[in-house]
Length: 129
Image (cartoon, rainbow, N blue to C red; front, top):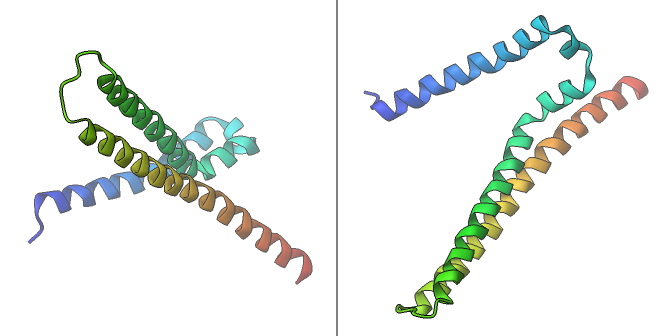
């Protein structure tokens, strides 16, 4: 028996798979300029890495804003509270930010360089063998 969450995720997966192929095909059929333009093809081929890098940047900005608001609370004139809790929370957020941004950007660059390496291998095999 499948629960609601699993079936919902399966439906989303199939919709994403269906639309992913159809959007690119529709764009290239509807607008012939997309078929010929190498830059648009390259952007579409690395869209997952672009999304990952953008997510890392957004997470970075959000975390910096949260840390800034924590420092703003601490530096208030009438601060009443546990300062050690806020310092610990700030350090924890800095560590989480560093790790998550590093991993997301690493994933992004791995996607780009793996595609480039595969194309280079294919090209070298074609020329030399």
